[in-house]
Amino acid sequence: MTFIKKAQNFINSLSFVYAVALAVALIWLIGWEIAGFFMLVGFACTTLLLQRNATPFVVITSLATYCLSLKQIPESISTGRVPAEAVTLAVAVMALFAYAIFCVVYHKIKFPRQNKKFLNLSNSFAFCLVALALGGLLSDQFSLENNAIVVVLYAVLFVIYVILSSGDVPEFKKLISNVIIAIGLVVAFEMIVVICQSSDPVWFIAHKRTDLGWGVTNNAATVLCFAVMMALYVCLEKENPLYMILAAFFAIMVLLTMSRGNILALLIAIPFAAVYFLVKTKRKKTMTLTVVAILAVIGLFVYTNQKLVTDLFAVMFDKGLENGDRRYLWGYFIEQFNTNKLFGVGFFDPVKNVMYQPHAILVHVMSGMGLFGLLVFGYHYYRKYIVLFSHGSTFRFFAVLTCYQLFMYSVIDMDFYMIYQNFLVLGVLEALKQEREELGKTEQILQVPVWANAVIVMLGLMLVSVGTTFVSSAVVADGKWGYCLWEIDYIITFACYVIGGVAIFISWGNLWRNNLKYLVFKKRKKVLTDKN
Image 1 (tube, rainbow, N blue to C red):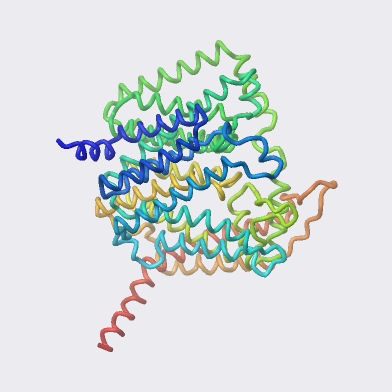
Image 2: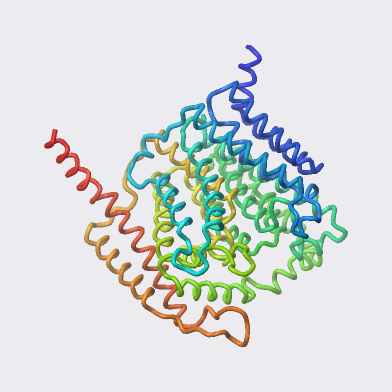
């Protein structure tokens, strides 16, 4: 076997995934992310000479973010000066982005056949870029420059998705699941290092002081939740109880992030995952004993270290699930939406010129892009729904739980600017699309009668109309910044948009997909045939 053939086999193996993960962890540990980033980009570009698929791009792009530490960025950034390291890093990022475009051209990447369908996931993603560009239009806060920043961020994600949807990555389902597990290992390693370096680990964990350079505990928790589900999937595929232990380790690390939204989402998902796993596994006795052993070890630790556990979670329990700040924040941004319902008010604070953070994806879309953005992003989520429920399989079940983790978290926290988490979700969706093609699954998702879909669409339009014309009258409560979300007008407005929007997106999508599309295209085809 020649050297080039050996290199190709290594790049297309899982060993390559974990080798890159190890390199990323070491780069982060020693703080050489600038040099390390260039090395990763250079290696990725070099692989183009060895093979004609995008496997190294997927692996390196997925993992490169996690080598960014705080060690190279000096304190001068707080003074407003841009450090030289940040400029160098920006060049490396642009090089990686250029490599992504080069992949598309060099490999002559084309969309799979299914991506040529009308209004598919790819097209809906492109429409989201239009909605982002128009965010705040007709508002005093509209800024072409600021909107361009947001569009570019999502355009990078879109280019990455183009490569993911090219279909030229072999065994993509296997690749993306192991990439997510490798990322979970890197993130867990970085968390352990940071915690051990602190002077008081218990206080450090309890007060969420972990900053890994590329993100804080909330960001780490989301990725670790993904890793829990993918570890369970691989465990079921390989029937190897070691992956069950790995999933439990990732879940414990999620708890140590003290990210309440992610912990809540994981605790809701785990019972469903556990029941499904124990029903599907062929080694029921071995897996059951493994689960019992894990629970026994955790229970014994909690029993013998009650004070430690109490100290760790004291701050989180004191705050509860919601300490009131979000209610006022959401109310404030809904009021912003009321000032410009069609296109919203954009994404940047006009005074501080910093990105808005409403900490809820629905409120963020409504306030930033208005009804137009709600329509476009709603259809984008519907297309994701199409992919997630287009067929049944083991991977599909855990893919649903993976996507659910981010969606559940984004309902009460940030998601809008979390590019790397969304990248992993898009990777999972693409793996599902490829699996569906391999299985030949094309059945319709919802078998709902035409008349029922039509009625639901009309009811949805009515609710959205009520929400649009309903003028909120909330006032500042007790001198606090923002508006109280629990005012009855906010409850009515919010409920109308949520219920009405969901009804429209799902029912109209089913009408088009199952009935209208064939009628329209059939007539168009007949007209073209008659002309010829």
